[in-house]
Image (tube, helix red, strand yellow):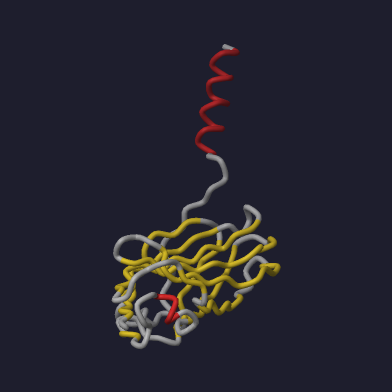
Length: 168
């Protein structure tokens, strides 16, 4: 009988998992119930913080010109705003954004500084994509990812399918 109790305890512990919570994709954008703008679709999400796309300086589907031959020529020209709302309180070390090319390479990156995210309190963060990897232009972006990095109560990720074109 002790073996059966130990097995039951082991199964219960396994069912409880390791504390990583997977949440559904981000709810619709600003306005509670309004759809995301055309050209952006919520994708996979994980973690206890809901990350909602609110908008940006360049509309999804737009073409950004004047970049030159490297994406670095367009660094700083795209910014997005997201809303973060967590189920727990914790220290955010930073919020990072990545614009991935169709090749999956993160060509433009953004980072916002840390702060304390309080449970149930929404916080808006603007990410300016001012850091560039060595990506050649013309370039098509297919994916936007935002990571909230910090303690386990806030570590989260949200992805979106999005289209941006960067041209010389």
